[in-house]
Image 1 (tube, rainbow, N blue to C red):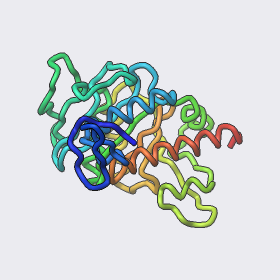
Image 2 (image 1 turned 45 degrees about the vertical axis):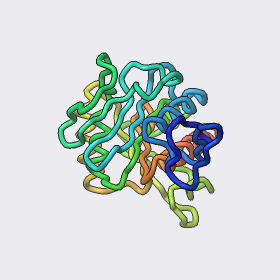
Image 3 (image 1 turned 30 degrees about the horizontal axis):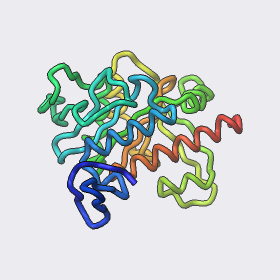
Image 4 (image 1 turned 90 degrees about the vertical axis):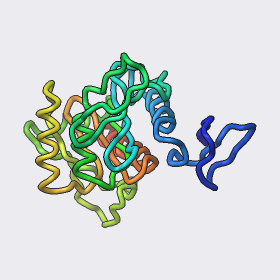
Length: 230
């Protein structure tokens, strides 16, 4: 369960001594849920130091995203900025010194492309980078192993051939975001995820809990591929 001092939002949440115990991340307000995800990912080595960024929609026109340069294992609900999807404008920042994550442009591109996406989670892990490194130079996709866990992406075929979109890492994030937008606009991927080589995966979902589940599933598959030397 996830603890929050916020009021319980629905019947699946339970109040104990004035604290809301949520059964899913979706029972929490967006920033509170993202704090839980950040601490969890940090503990699992997926967001070491200040690396990675997380976001969740506030409404169809705005999303909350982690502030740049904050240790992900120690985030609180003030370490976020509210961004307008249309132009990337910062609409709200609780702490004056907060700056948007360097990869805000990628989150904006994904929310614009996929109106049903409610959350985008980006982390850095050793296994994900190793798996991507084994793809051929210039490859546009990384084939995912057809193991049972692929069903977590709602893929139910027998021995499916599923590709994870693969992009080259760039210091110019605006250029990378434009490349992501251009390619995924032409064809939506079979999985709600992408990988940047030598960097890390980004996963989105129709809810924050779905995005979290799918990030965890993708990490499992990539870890399997590294160990199986696929």
